[in-house]
Length: 264
Image (cartoon, helix red, strand yellow):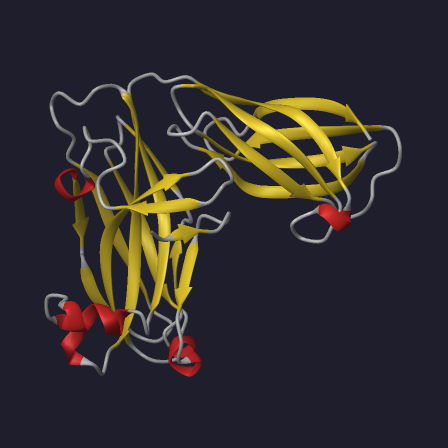
């Protein structure tokens, strides 16, 4: 199984550093939310390299784990919604000149009997050297080996059907000294407990008084997990006294999802 890091946008750069540098690509935006009224969204693929590249768009499924990593799965995350059947991509493959960009349309063709809920899939853009004509053929076993020598970017796409509720609460907050923290910096550890049917995607900030002492973006808790165990690095060792944590929404109303005060 493959596991992704906490940052949801994956840059899969394998060996051959010079070729990888020439083949740099990106996708904007970094994550997409589609509701039942839209049924479609656009992404833009950017060629950040210094030579033309051939790009292929594919769909993938990942399952979130409580520690914030993601596991690639061979079946749809929810069997009621199969991305390979229910998503249309246009165009699926194209050539990008150096510094060029290409808009790609994602269209939802939902089943008539699809239950209300949140459905997630992932879009992968993989870049190949334009000079290698073999990448234009249908991928084979040998082509898949070659793919590992190129650059891929993966972003999540969330489709919500119906009127769903969603939220999260920060619980079980504790201070972690730098000597015990994952990143070697003082940190706050807490559970981000999801509420309702939908996942949440946001940013948490820590304050002492008016001073921001920590920030963590891309803090997502999706609908397949009930909570996320978070370790949030801090810019400095907080002084004794209250610490205010504010978790804000990155989509929709951009409002505050949860706010709590804890003691150092």
